[in-house]
Length: 386
Ligand SMILES: [Zn+2]
View 1 (cartoon, rainbow, N blue to C red):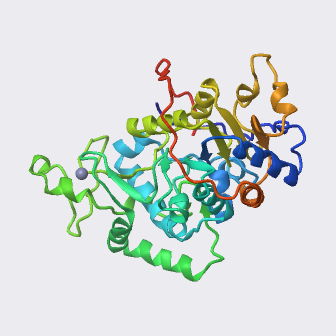
View 2: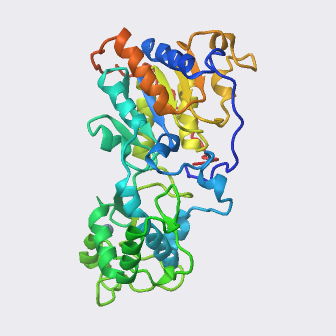
């Protein structure tokens, strides 16, 4: 399943479900009913919930695709095969990292964590690569569907490592860039364009001169002796052409054109199957890998809830009970069977927690028995969109 470039245009809004949930208080009531009447709800979160932490989303009013029609994220194949693309990626990522490292969870992350602590939510699958759910609630079960910015993966030996020491190496190997980073720090007004994947655009710099280190484990492996060539400071020497070299480090986040890791995909499916309801927060589900999880939930008779500012990809499929339109039980219900509201997830969760804590006290956290069936369906081709 390959991650492909998603739709870049905003999706149309969808009528509220239930049809009365058009104000914040009525939306809060509907989402409360949804959670109160579910045995175990799984949250599926997207970029929309990190906007309040200062990270841009893709398709919101200030989203990267909305403001910058030319923006194209890096492709996996280019990163793997082209030395120049790796330098360019790491240069931008180097400058963007400090901003990513500094962001803090907002009330949406805190709200999800409190729902989990209270037993109303079993855990989270997130499309976000910002580690903010973990920062907010480290012990909550979290599946990072698209990997993380804060961990690295060696494409040869598959060893995972932390970003922080790698970032220190980038500082050491790129003193000029390191100074530019200091300049950015001392000039908060310096205009930089930040992208959702944690990199930034800098006009007029030579990305090709940026230096990066190889995987240290592969470097010591005698099988690769002579294949990884270093300069005198320990940085990878320029590689001409499309040569495949060992020891290339990449963030674990899934690039466009890259496959989701099988174990992550499987884990996400198991967690959907174990829940009886899925609540989408701050995602337009434009990535197929996320959309298909909600579709899977729907196909298995689980309840679906969506809290997102703006439209959601192919959402008719979640509300149509075979009549070709939104089923009456959703439209005329009270949110128990399904909810679809267009409000900020953080605001909604704050109100929902007030209601739940008043009505339901604290549910004891409990594990949900595994699902009965194992309907796998045919292998799917990712047609996508991240
Ligand atoms: Zn390695």
